[in-house]
Amino acid sequence: MKMAVEYGRSIGFTGDFYIEPKPKEPMKHQYDFDAATAIGFLKQYGLDKDFKMNIEANHATLAQHTFQHELRISAINGMLGSVDANQGDPLLGWDTDEFPCNVYDATLCMYEVLKAGGLTGGFNFDSKNRRPSYTYEDMFHAFILGMDTFALGLVKAAELIEDGRIDDFVKERYASYNDGIGKKIREGSTSLKELSDYACDMKAPELPGSGRQEYLEEVLNNVLFK
Amino acid sequence: MSEIFKGIPEIKFEGKDSTNPFAFKYYDAKKEIMGKTMEEHLSFAMAWWHNLGATGVDMFGRGTADKSFGASSQGTMEHAKAKVDAGFEFMKKLGIKYFCFHDVDLVPEADDINETNRRLDELSDYILEKMEGTDIKCLWGTANMFGNPRYMNGAGSTNSADVFCFAAAQVKKALDITVKLGGRGYVF
View 1: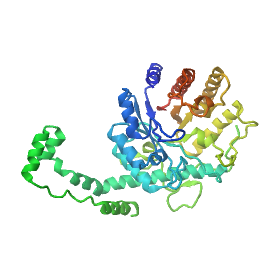
View 2 (view 1 turned 90 degrees about the vertical axis):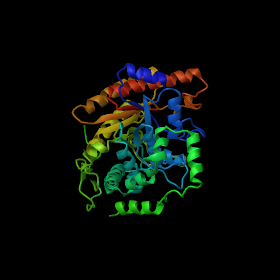
View 3 (view 1 turned 180 degrees about the vertical axis):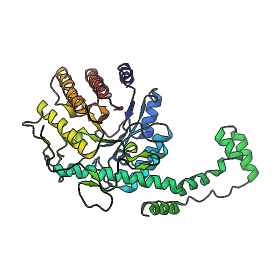
View 4 (view 1 turned 60 degrees about the vertical axis):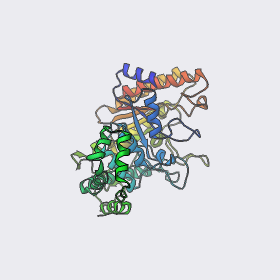
C-alpha cells in the first residue's frame, strides 16, 4: 500500500486512496474487519493521510454494525471518503449487495454525510439485481429505486437537521462538559487526583440525564412521515 | 452505434404522485437542499461489475440475465466494447455522472499479463472517447485481486512472493487506468 501511494503520487494521482472494510468473504478473518480496525491499521503504518474509508452498507451489517455506526466512526476520524450504496438481508448472513430501498437507513446515512460536510468520493451502487429480475427494464428499475431512496434520505436528513430536536438533545446531553470540571476534562487540564477529590467532595453523584431513546425514535418517525 | 436499451426512455423526475415506472419520484437532480443541488450531494456511480457484468449466477444456479449487449461472443474485446456502449447509454439515460471499475471488469484477462495490460490500454482509450462530450467521469478504480486462482491464499497476504508481484503489477496498472480516466479515488 505504501508503494501504491508512492507510485500513484508519482504519476499525478491527487485523489484519495480508500479502504473498503469488510469482515469476511472470502476469509473467515480479515485485516479490514470494520472502519475502526481499518483506521487503526492505516495509522499503524502511516497511511492515514493518504487513505480514507469507502463504507459499504452491506459490509457494515456483516460486521454486526449499523451502516450509520461505520459512517460515524469514519467521520469522527476525518476519514469518511466514499460510500458503496447497497443493503444486505438481515435474514441472510452473506454479502447480497441488494439495491438500497430502506429509507430509514438512507436517512441516517445522509444525516452522517451532511454532518461530515459531504464525501470526497460519491455513492457507488455496489448493488445487483436479484436473480429473477433479469431484463434490461429491471436494470433501470433498480437504479431508479436506489437513486430515489438516497434522494429521500437526503431530503429527510436535511429536515432532521433543520428540525433541530435531535441536535438540541445531543447538546443538552453533554452540557456538563461545557464548564466547570467538565470543561477541564475536555481540555485535558485536570488530573486523576483532582477528579477523585471532586468525586469525594460530592460523596455521591445524581443519575445522569435520561437517554430518551423512545422520544428520539418518535422524533425521527415524525420527521420521516410528516 | 445502435441503441441497446430500446424502448427505455431518458429517466426524468416526475414527482411523488407519478406512477410511471421509468421516472424518478424523489430524485430531482437540480433541486437545492442545504445550499447544494441533489446531484452535487449525491454523486451517484454505476458499478461496472454488477451492472454490466453480473448475470445472476450464484452457487445454486446459472445466470438468468443476458449481458452480451449484442456482442457475438462473450469474454472478447468485442464484448468489452459492447459493455462500454451499454454502460454509457445506461448512465446517460439515468443522468448518472460517475462509474467505478475493477481492472478485470473492463477486459477479459489473458494468460499473459502483458496482453491483459495491452487490452486495458485499448479499452481505456475507447472509454476516453466515449467520455468526450459528456460529463461522465470515473469515480474510482480498483484491481480485482481475489477472482483469479493465483489469489487463493490472498494478494497482499499471499505466501508467494511471485503472486505478490502480480498483485503489485495489477495495482500499478489499475492506478494508471484510474488516472487516465480522471478518477477521484482508488480503492483497496
